[in-house]
Length: 233
Image 1: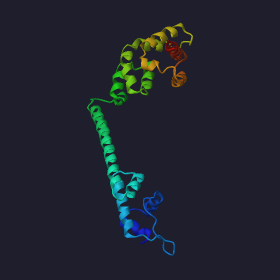
Image 2 (image 1 turned 45 degrees about the vertical axis):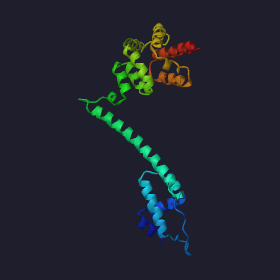
Image 3 (image 1 turned 90 degrees about the vertical axis):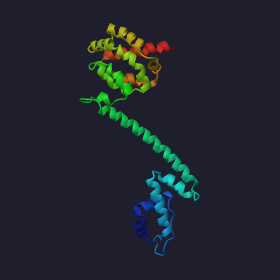
Image 4 (image 1 turned 30 degrees about the vertical axis):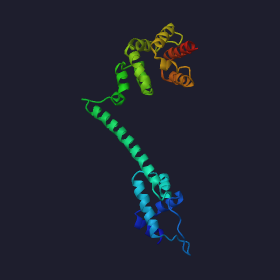
């Protein structure tokens, strides 16, 4: 039979059949004298198997390996792996739906802070809503959960630090308040953050920070980094 007839019987497109040939899933049939492929019913059976395995969620590479194993041993192994993957996806989906259910149970309008992780939500509740604290809120969304958990105690007592940072908005980088504030900020920072301040990523972060905040505010964190490096020597 011609490729169009095979496609109709197997319920796939001719383009898919050509792709399966290219991927090695379907063997090339013999050709007629005019050069056209001459398919048999066994090719339709193979295509039906490919379609069923694809519907189960197997990739084309996995299907090729399964078809190469006539005894079906590899098929069982692949299906077990697929079942485990689906179980993990189910668990992740259940966790997302539980989080969504908690959000939908909140009365009134939802703010952007409501959709963050529970760890981050606990930290953000303690932050003031304006000034440097507002910028810090955005930066904290980049931190991993374990670091966020350590930030809780720091943020709860940080209202004074944020107020002092706001007061430096129009100050010069050499303002005497910068050094005093840097020392106080350093005392409140968790060890997990201090350990990374001397790394290349910390240097890049300081460079980006200088674009987002005032020169005096950036100077505070430059001094924090310098003091942290000195402490870690």
